[in-house]
Image (cartoon, rainbow, N blue to C red; front, side, top):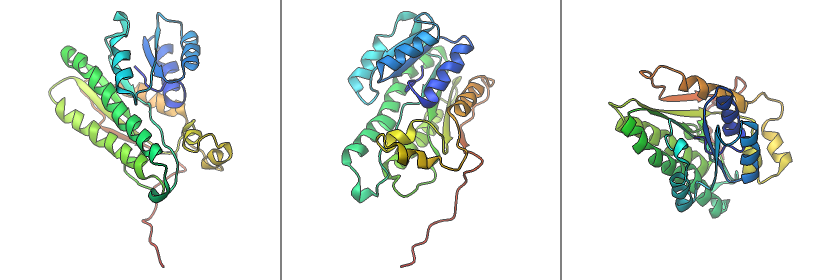
Length: 246
């Protein structure tokens, strides 16, 4: 199951796994995109689409309950759906943006994980891959709730590993840096000029880079668990601490 499969990392993962013969459940809020991707990836026998918003608890639980029998056994969950909204300082943000990031990046990821875990536990096998961010480790001005939500993903992933010790269920938190997807278009609410500035004169990660990483992880030996993986483009690095001199 790949959440947020209508663009970016999720869409690239869907194409890569389908090419290798995997059966997929792809989720997202944009039905037409899901339908087009399903048709591209071999139709309903190989790819099941589930259109819902993971920030909606009832819709998420219903979507899992209504999965066709042949797709109910989820071996790998890629918790990819998430977003950043705005880049204003905390005192100037839209509170609705904060709520939406918490509902999606935190609550949605929690719900999907909780819904697949009983099946994985009963089979003593499975893999949960969470898409975190370097923002969960390295805060920046305007990141406020987005950074905090990705710090949650990191700690939740570590806590899952602690709970699952003694099982064959694996958990990895992937923390990408600057990646050129729809991320900035969503963050800046379709302001294309502002979004393009994020990637101007630099070489960012691609969605394929992250999909290839997830593919490698899934194909590592079962006795091996990569707990956390921070991935930055070569042209990005952490910097010195900021000092205000007033």
